[in-house]
Image 1 (cartoon, rainbow, N blue to C red):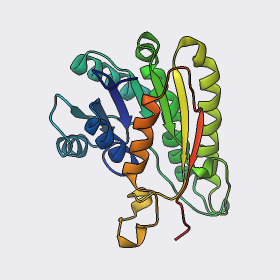
Image 2: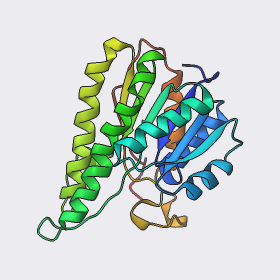
Image 3: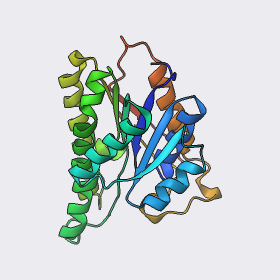
Amino acid sequence: MTASNKVVYITGGTKGIGFGVAKALVDSGYRVAISGRNLDDAQTAALSIGGEDQIIGLRSDVRVALDDMEAVQTIVQHFGQLDVVIANAGLGKFAPVDELSIEDWNAMIDTNLTGVFYTLKAGLPELIKNKGYFMSIASLAGINFFAGGSGYNASKFGVVGFTQAAMLDLRDKDVKVTVILPGSVTSHFNGHVPNEEDSWKIQPEDVGQLVVDLLKMNRNVLPSKIEIRPTKTK
């Protein structure tokens, strides 16, 4: 898939991985829409990358199916099409299972897992029409469980399983599907403020470059699950 005229939608694109992917795609010639739960944040992030002919910021809560559908409609109205959807929005609440609140459990499942389903469902008609590409951003926590991660693990294990099954459903409809499992990434995830001590981690722009490379690959090649981790452990 060449960049010429192609349009990419990224959820959770105002900072962190989503922002890094958006910037890499705009720099490579793609037209991009990013969304977040706050319209001002989404528009400010988009403006810091490029003009409205290159990138727009939208308000959308991936936990709300109607928001996802309206975001896709806005993108098609603005750019005329949609070719790639990247389900990136996510959050983490960590606590032992006996202390994990029902509210935090629901927030993770609704955002990290159900939100991926809603995002794909909203974009799928355009993806099928344009022989497009769907990617989800999971985590190595989607294959490696850890103490205090019951809710987060459940959501990310679910994303991996969901995306891999969707890949089998959609490959014969000419829609490519990939799940990306990053390890430690320098980001604002879970309230973290990036600092110099994060230099050993994967950088958001590294994930962005990976996405650009995936989109350049021959249509006959489908890397369905990709694990990425820092070269060193600190």
